[in-house]
Image 1 (cartoon, rainbow, N blue to C red):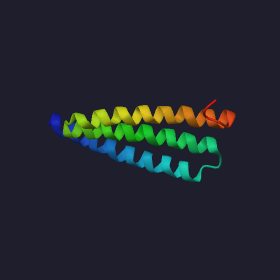
Image 2 (image 1 turned 30 degrees about the vertical axis):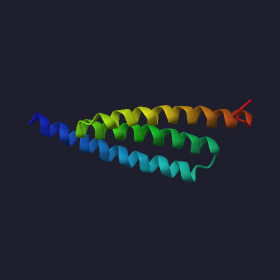
Image 3 (image 1 turned 45 degrees about the vertical axis):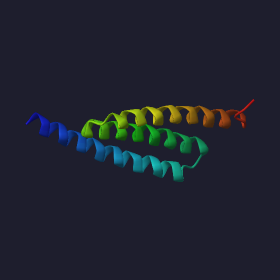
Image 4 (image 1 turned 90 degrees about the vertical axis):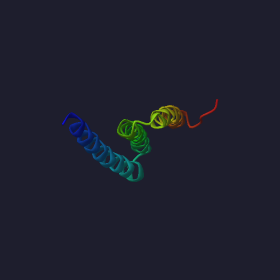
Length: 93
């Protein structure tokens, strides 16, 4: 009984994360300003990382956890780079 409830809760979490990724992608494409597009990208990579974590929990495969860590690191660096570009107009000083 406990395993069945865990499987169903992970499935519901994956469906909700998929919806959140669709909304973030919509905001990234149709954002009225550049700041909204970057915020949509941040939300998209966070949701992608969480989706990988739920796949890792569901399949009990550690490869998903490592790839989620890589997505988180690359997403953080890209957020910093985009923010710096919006503030100053250049990335490398």
